[in-house]
Length: 262
Image 1 (cartoon, helix red, strand yellow):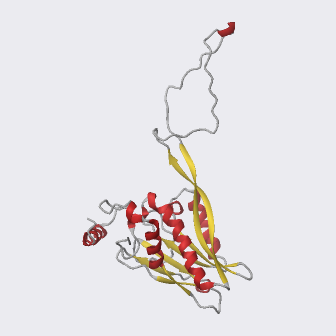
Image 2: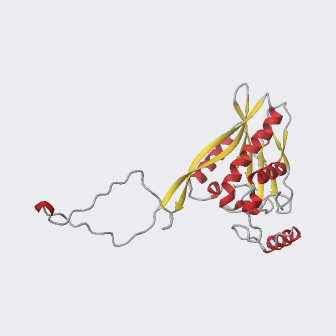
Image 3: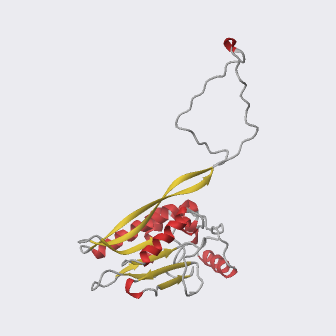
């Protein structure tokens, strides 16, 4: 079953769905590019591992690798005084860190393996101030913008802190950005509303090779159906945070009613 939205589906931003969607999106982009750019170029997946902090509640068990337990002998056992261990008066909860694997796509020129174009798909941790991945991505972004590689940045998340632009662009839930080496500091930006179909964007290669077309709408539709997200998503509920504007809420309600989902 396809998504009821013409473009990006805000319900995919649910944490239960997003991580699976993010990495499959990278894989689908790589597969489609490799149909068009070979044999001169190759698209590859590049992993980045960070850690996400998760608070563990009382009902979720976390078990150590090894546990040793022995009954305590009574005091004065064997005639030797034994200190009485005082039980802890209270219990609390700690925050544990779990590995989070994120994928980006890189296009390399085969003969030199030189990086030609980096395609970055932002994840919530990339937009979360204070997180390691927030600082790491901004550092990587600066390095890419100083390099001879093109950069495509896909932001399909409404929440978190946006990447900086020195000149304002129209407000939108989602953005796609293209920074060509020869056009810097100017960048092309696609602001995307809920009602907008996702664009087919150019993916730059090395001169004199022409751009390759990447149909983001077809990419997202393929990932949505392959992931079976229609089974996971309850469109009768409100989409995940952040809260929609009044106009966005009105459009979303009307749109889902037309599709019999409200």
